[in-house]
Length: 210
Image 1: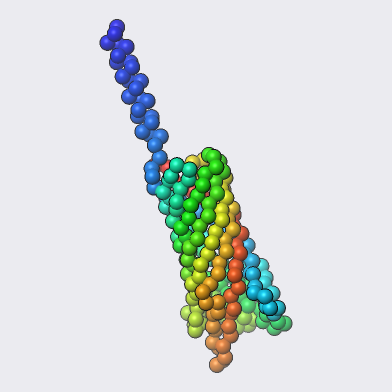
Image 2: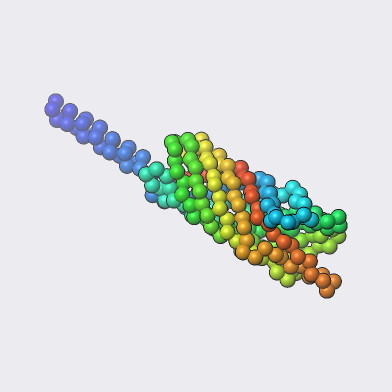
């Protein structure tokens, strides 16, 4: 009988130890975020000719998170599609389309199992692949200067439905080191002066379970 109880206790303790090992989370976790939403232009004082139209930003970010006791540090990179639409004076109606390749480093804080907040900063590499000004239209490769580099800052809030799926709301600001693109046509140059952009995004984030 004593031997029987010893066998039962050993099975219980071994099962308990196995369950604890199973519940341990890995230190590094990948993530995938899909998001999109409107963007707003913030012009410098004195700019009166440019009038922004409806604009958007959308895309996907891949990341890796290093979990800590109250949150995680993370590194994100991805591809965003965005545009810059505005009228200038009474004759120009400009629409420029871009691919944005951001790289962000930040920290996410967990208030509890459901609510999370994060802040990050990084670099943004922008390539213009299409430009239209009224009837004039060209590909980005035909532009004299079709790319920009800048810095970006992001604040984010998440609501977790589970360990894997969460809904996120982001506010992202972009500012560029050089704020002019140049388009040459008919022996003349047309410049695109870039403001600071504020992007408001809603998305879904997925973290696979291992």
